[in-house]
Length: 427
Image 1 (tube, rainbow, N blue to C red):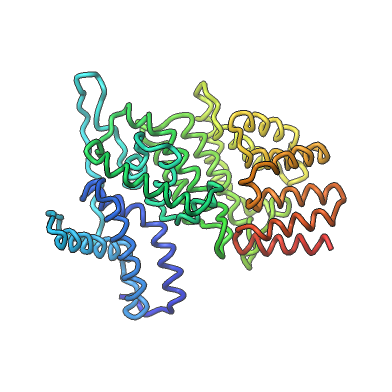
Image 2 (image 1 turned 30 degrees about the vertical axis):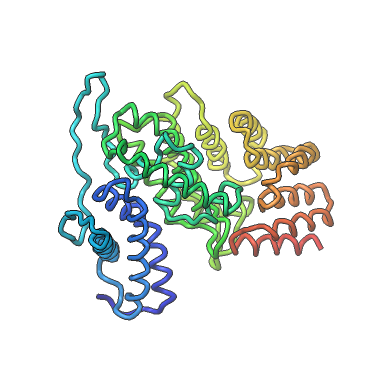
């Protein structure tokens, strides 16, 4: 065991470890216990984290914290099953996680090939949770909860919904998944993999978004969450059964966005907006990776939201500074994205691009039309965009009111501090 550490340091390290390892730990237990015991797997992983919080500050962190959590979670699962009178033969508890099993391909009588290669444990769990018998939005919520451990509140903020409604939908999705236990398997056919892949991509996209810009908490970026989403996207891109132009487009998008992480905050963790970022801090390796995958994404016939959003991110990456950004081209891509998604969040970003393209009056009028979306009233970026457009239109008093409205919404501490600074400039 290492030397003892303060409770604050332990808590911080454990939170990061739990976010990084949770999906793998739950995936390992689900593989051993069956999909019908998904709730048990989640519970014992959480119990293991609680046990770590109670033990590590006094005894020190173990040399292999992930293996410690895995062993404790397995022991707790075994104990619960034994107490329930349904003792299950579990394997010996080893320090390291077992490697993913090798799956052989077998042709079925109808010509489908079973044993499609999805070997990554977290990806297996994501494909499992993306059960078509469950409504897609519920699949997304369930998977974010199970794999990344996001709370109902985090998920509600991401989907612009009420906490209670999300809690009910999560419970319903878990009941449905348990009811489908007999139809669940780790070995999906290539047909089933391709059928579920679009939803899996949405999960990874949302996971990255929640890491890129959490709607609450002290951090501007949950970098471990965003990095894990990029890793999962790359894993899909590198496996023949899941590689596709759409997957490469998603990898490109996430790599472009991740390349700016070091420039998004100053030494004190305060937000630095795109206009003022030091572009020499942008990660050139990630930008090059993104352009490589953009090229691969162009081999298909369809144009997805990931293609369009990657094109927007590429425009920022290609510009040497903010003033050199081709906002006219950006606006053109945003309009295509608006048509494709019909998303009010996309529409907000499009209005900002339109204002920077030299049409702030038209952008503001279109943004005002979005106020009828009730879900945007508690969405800080809507009020922030409105405030910035009002500043561009030389209407500081109205801009101040919009900044105040943004401050009344959920936001991370660095965003709150930034909004307070912007509000002060309107007085």
